Length: 173
Image (cartoon, rainbow, N blue to C red; front, top):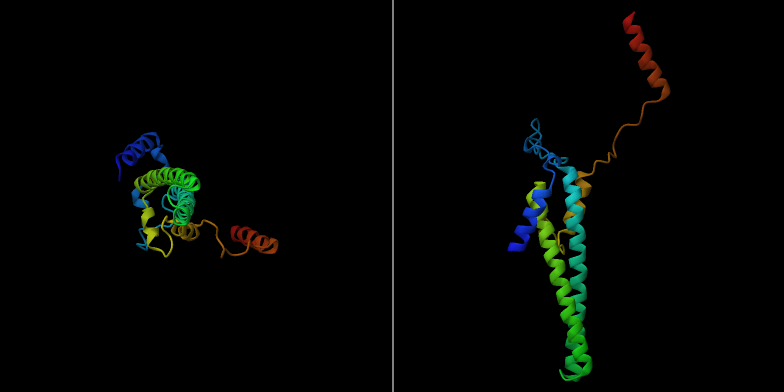
């Protein structure tokens, strides 16, 4: 971690409303002992979306850098370092490299912030195949932590509600 990531993270933490975080006692279900998938869910989405966007930007910048490098190398092989086109492509490569370095710096800063505040570790996702930036991990975690209930029972019918109400009234007699 470089000094800029530490200083930027400190600045964000100083400005962050800490009441958005769940108490650490909510990280684990006390009955089952399992991780609580809804622990810090708001912060998970809020900061995770920032890291995911920074990761997308870094991923894109890496692609542009690789393309610029390939074009520059191809031109050098065809026409040598003295060609005008090589000079142009070298400048484009230098600019693409600067864009990538900036994108990486923003990603590293957002990842550090996410790890420091959310109670999760973004870097865990990098162990997934082809997931250098953790984007596949984040997508899988969003699905796992989704608050959308897909297996909820159907809403009671009007007859079921009327029967329930009648049973309540009958219990009072």
